Image (tube, rainbow, N blue to C red; front, side):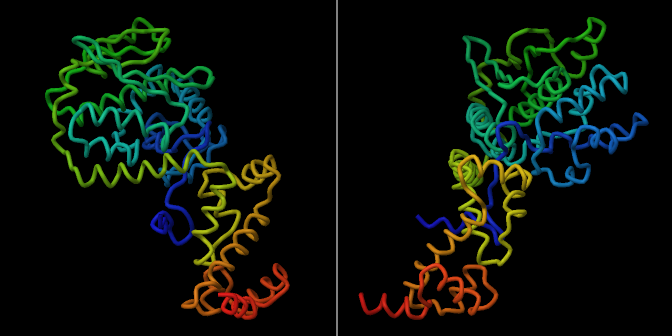
Length: 353
């Protein structure tokens, strides 16, 4: 199968968060909200090892616990026990990126919720586990985090509000949540405000978080449904999901193959595409007994042999496709790899064929 469409000029279209990462889009609106309380958002972010400039790119990945700790710190610093709820009030479901777009394009609420469950952990937050539980009269969208992130009251508040907003968006004006269960340490005097913000009954629980609604809603059509968009986004996310199951070495190989023709292939760009620092990428490869430069050279060797077998490609074309600005540089590298020149190698292929 031709997978050229899977790459940009400088590498794969798709990168996915690692096990303990999430998209920084969860901090959308954070800086303005904190400033409104008279605090310095930059100092707070830097205190928790988050680059304030990174928030400009919603697809940047950040450590999950850092985000959770920022929310809890702000709740204490600002004396705001419902900080996560207030932050989510100024956010939209688009925080969830292309998964939210997929949900809006689904044909029914059921298809939308199932898509949300399937793909959110893949491209937004791998530590999130979600499920749809259907009863006779009530359905529940449940979620929990399969990692020890410490106190995460505020992150649970944020997730509840964002998930409610998404359900209201796809369910339309008739959507009415029955109740919300949250694993939070809410004070009794805050429950009225929580219920007012959520728009339904609220229960503290030691179990999974959940939003309940009438089960009949699942078969309701989504007003914004688009079969074409759903198919395109679903196909895209299936490829991302498949890519997320590959090893770190395979993901680096994919990046290199896509980036070489543009001449921008580098370990720095590769690390950025994979949502990690250069040091982390090097450490991950080292655990497999590999180095980036070795993978790069192996890919160049394999691709060079393949390209030289394609008569329609000139030697200049082959050199360019491998990221060399000059044919002479490619020639020297190829002779070092194989003991012969690209021209002689091509001639031998022609003679043997």
